Amino acid sequence: MINRLNDINDLTSAQIERLIALAEDILADRAKYQDILNHRTLATLFFEPSTRTRLSFEAAMLELGGNVIGFADPNSSSATKGESVADTIRTVACYSDIIVMRHPKEGAPLAAALRSPIPIINAGDGGHHHPTQTLADLFTIRREKGRFDGLCIGLCGDLKFGRTVHSLIHAMSRYDNVRFILISPEELRAPDYILEGALGGPNAAYRETDSLESVMPELDVLYMTRVQRERFFNEADYVRLKDSYILTRRMLERAKDSLSILHPLPRVNEIAVEVDDDPRACYFKQTYYGKIIRKALLAAMLGVCE
Amino acid sequence: MNIDSIRNGIVIDHIQAGNSMRIYQLLRLDRLECSVAIIKNCKSRKMGRKDIIKIDEDFDVNLDALGFVDPTVTVSVIRDGQTVGKRKISPPERIVNVIRCNNPRCITTTEPGLDHVFHLTDASRRQYRCAYCDAARQ
Image (cartoon, rainbow over all chains, first blue to last red; front, side, top):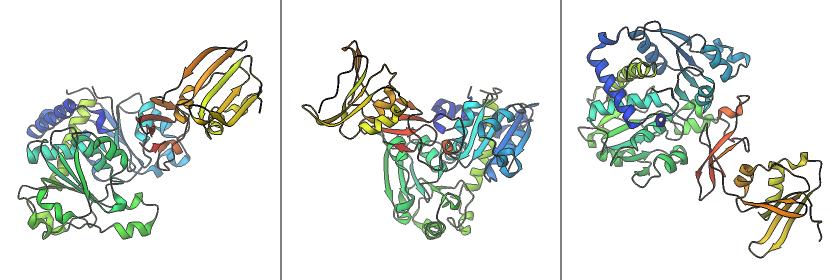
């Protein structure tokens, strides 16, 4: 059983496959799973804003027959009084069966897991990891492409602070013949612990560029990301970099017909609205699949399904 | 320059020249009541120049801290004026509460009571990364 999910590397490839298989079954027969988490309670502790991650976890728990407690704003919790993460977790564990936590500090979910007597899921820690978004990304790629092996994946935008990018690289670097093209301005390149770690192995193939248009014909998957205002210490740097890449319909003319465009959302300007109608745009499907794979994850972590 | 031999205590030898004060601080030798000698820049056949620290009291040396700062050192235990044990140091795989994380976004900067844990991620460069946020320290 999975006791904690702090980093996508907490899951083996076999566990990811079982979660995807369970998610497929949930998609095929929602009614079969509607009561499996009766009398179980999920606590959602969001010390940072969220729309998709929090609501998809809450919807997932409710659709499985469970209950939800929690807060969406740290100002409504004792964190504002200076309560530590460890004390918050030990308190919330008295009222719930599983915890989902987002926190602005990197490593906070790991610190929480060290003190938590119940399963805990990282829903994003600063610019570090976001493993459940990665599960949503993997489920989307599998549904769209039918495989993980042999894909050319372009990751574009804020690769420095983009936690979804870091987790996705960790996950996809496990598979055979995956090529990564890292597209970003110089200042937002992927951190060295990603380049040396996940991409540092002898089988990993990656290259860095600042030009999205030049690599477009090569891509099987294009993963766009937002430049994250909340991670900058300096507003002027954010303003200078925020519109580095804007994906338009014209830019897609040179892309493969089979390209899948993903984005963890929210977007700001990096994908023009006109792209939404392109059949290659998968980001709203990705949002839906995120709820389904989180249903699978909750069921697995509470020991109800394999 | 003559420094008296010690009868019972610890000699930390083969310290890379210039590292002795860092080791003094990391091992918190300022807290000891006994004599502590720091010998800097002495001649060494193997190293050219080296530092030595002599502690005139039996002392439980934090070998992980030593291995993190300077894996070239040797630690000798002296009893009745004789060397009764000698250890070479290697970089530890994991260090706890030896150094703190520099990343202002790391949870260790705000959470009380949390151990500061680092893992060795690149032995050739002696690079460690914070267990919480992955920030590098060397």
